Length: 573
Image (tube, rainbow, N blue to C red):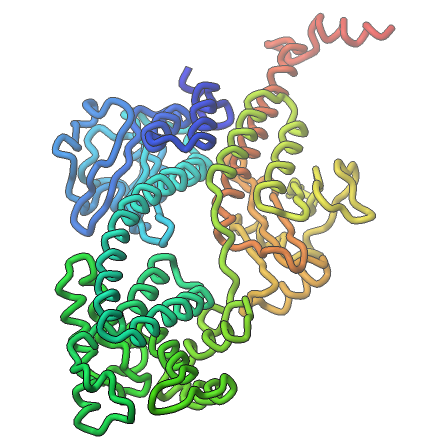
């Protein structure tokens, strides 16, 4: 009965549950994903942990933990040398069918009664590891495979998405409080000196555009906007006579004016919801060459938000009329920025600011590579469910391959997808299916499409090493041979992943993207490896049906054809 719950033969209830989680995004998505994971892998306990350097805290679980010594009775266990700790550190693999037979797993703490283990990290949108998603059983489970870890990775992204949403909700409440406090300070500044408040609002708009140009994270972008809003709030402590002086300030007045950075730090730091912004507010007048104030910070020691605000502050000040001088023309102000890049201003920030002023939309300098397309875990999960259902229902490998290729092409946005079998004895590859945009000599189900691996070193390397391979045409580290391959194919990027069956590389799944399309990246690999794992399951299922079919027509003792085989042979006559 448990075999019916293994990947490749999924229980329909588990598939329905997963489809519902992907489609509805319910508040209890984590609990439902854990239940579905346990059923799909046919294991006894599934759990989600949150990790710190010292311990794991159990966030949620599904199944009976009592038989494993109920290690989570107080909600947490010491982290050191647990199976999850070793998995996250990379000292053991993601899949351990029999803990007793895995030397690297022996002696693990916090896992009494665990004989089989599958675990993957749960990685949040900002790249940090939240913890781990794991399934365990009290009995060894020999048929566990790497494809089970690939399935858990997709589920882990669903769970991470839910955790990110919950954190976003809490952050929204926090930001509302911060915004209220910031606007209150700005209102006080506006009541005292209108130009400074309006200048701050203009710097916010420009600094936010620069942050977007640099492709900063959402959290960094919010911080830049907040620092821009508050960068001059310390002027609340500067005498009004200095703020309103119609002419240039003398040396003594400048010394007083420069105290506004430290005053701003104290003002912002005195408000709990804004305290984390205080260092960047203090550093907003630090120069790239270390000749700024108040601390003489140099280069990257200056907070990024401060570097951005300084350049935007200078641009708006130079291009605004003041009582003691006329505004500079945009062309003259631009020359000032360019001239002082690398001395007063961070060069990358100046490049981004000039890009914004020019109306450009591409990345600049420190973010020259295009960002990964945002992950769509629910789309990937639906594809895995569709493929798993096809594996469970189909008796012929060809039927599964068509579903696999179509779903893969749709989800990753490929121009074409190909699945091939490795004919080891002849050192060649046979193409089984092509989908998408096919060339003039390509067929969907080619009957005789074979090629020698000696002529295709990339395919030979992929199959012999059993490792996934990613080529992107805009990768500056791309080798000449790989670039020649893309040019020969007329494609912009490529991913090849091995299809493994019975512990050996059976073939390969390949995806291609056109030149100019969003290039593939390593982010796509876990999904494609999970899909390839389902192909491996389909191969096993097809071979099983082939053997069963053969036995139906053979004598169990002699192996010769039986009466049923004879009847079938004579039937056409």
